[in-house]
Length: 524
Image (cartoon, rainbow, N blue to C red; front, side, top):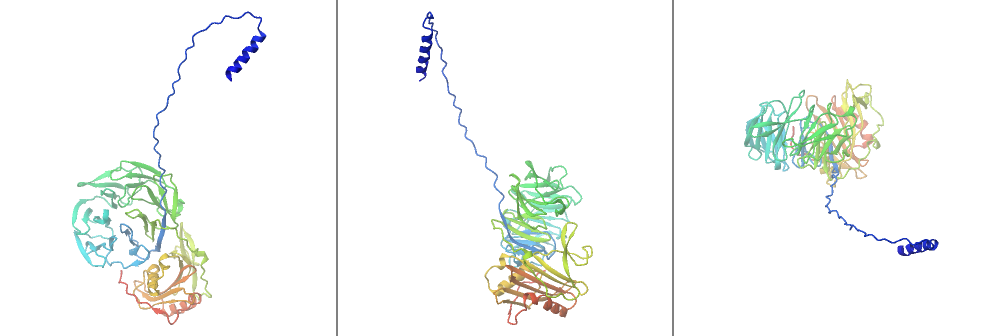
């Protein structure tokens, strides 16, 4: 087409200029440069893997502390947990706790306990086995950490100031090293290197690894306030303020990554200097305790925050296998990877209204005490009298002159949804919701006309200030309602007030209620 168009144009020009003399035609050689097509080499592109999302963790159980607020521990896979000076199974049921202070737990039911002024191995049936030859004089503050597969243990004796490594079967000492200064934490790193965090409360912390016959210091960022270790972890967290941490590779601390934490309201962070933070053993994520509860944040990702539990009153920690998160201080919570989120019954939807309030009783009311939610008797102030809000709180009343309390709480707990015999359900309910119970023969269980299960127990609680106690656990409103009355003045008043305040709402105990045999071992 281009040639035809060109001829047509030349013909038209020729028609209009036919009388002009013809121009001489000269030809010149045309040089053609060949076009060489350059093909770029194909470079294989390696796809950049997006950081894996934070794993989902669901709540197995949550309990308020009723024992001593001592350091907790978990077995390597967190099937057993020590918190609030009590031992729990991972379904929340209370397990008989040894009289001796517990230092470490094993998955098979064994434990390391402080007995006979030393550290000893206790078998699952409660008998004492091998004992370390190194003595202790301050087991309350000694630190113990288990190694991989729980074959060895680190024992830091705070009073004598030395770090001992033990074989956990024979309790034989493998090696020992002196430690100067106050020790705050110990743990094995992922490669088996013992790590030590030192420093008194008013001192900047230091981090060191046990190498040969000495401790080798690891440089920390300036203004580090806290150092957090995970059992068998790959990183340590150097916390400089409320929002900044530096992840240090273990055991040498060479590789460092800065990370900005997403924290809740500063005014309600439990720790005065920084939120309570703990790294996962694989070093990819951290768990943060702040005003929102427990949240997971990735160290190797985009900083996405996932709140996994809406309550946190104690230091969080991963189990050695990284699949469980444990908290223990003022409460104990256990969250496990892959467990679906639980739908709770809103506590405001549960009512417990008294037909009449006996003279002298006033309600406990919620107040804000310097950023903490507490209860105080109506007409009083937190400075004079206060109480932590119980888990699942519904209502409570207080008699100041006679010395009495009635607490009503409501719980949604999977362990009590199980289809089991009535007496087994009753014992589980008592263990789950009132583990301070002493041995008593006065335990009765029954089913109501609607099939709901209930258990009621009476006993006298000893100690410096003994009280007469009645507890009722009853299936109600999609969960379990717990009513607990404590009276310090008179058992007769306890019975009278129970009949006036609880029975009109939950009903009386039937005369044919089943007597439940309690055979639980005596605990501290």
